[in-house]
Image 1 (cartoon, one colour):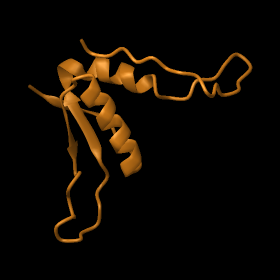
Image 2 (cartoon, rainbow, N blue to C red):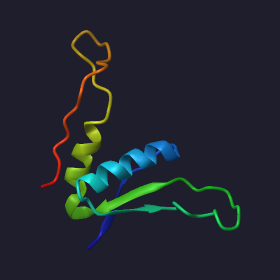
Image 3 (tube, rainbow, N blue to C red):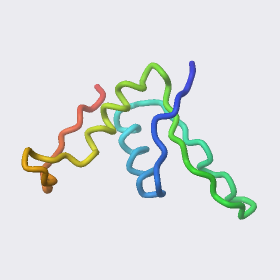
Image 4 (cartoon, rainbow, N blue to C red):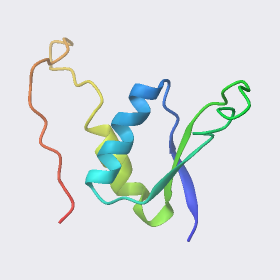
Length: 88
């Protein structure tokens, strides 16, 4: 099965959040360049989270729920609980 790029996290915290979300929803993935450079102290390459093509739509939907939402007045909604559809 083919893997495709889902997301390029900007930092390790963002990567950890996305990995946790994918794990909780039983979406198969791997992270390109996750351990590159650690052994030889080389420059870090950008991470790329790769998912199976067959699970791309579900993974994209889950990530879209994490993005900031704005109400009709254009202000960000804060402090709201987002219920994510978990895999069953």
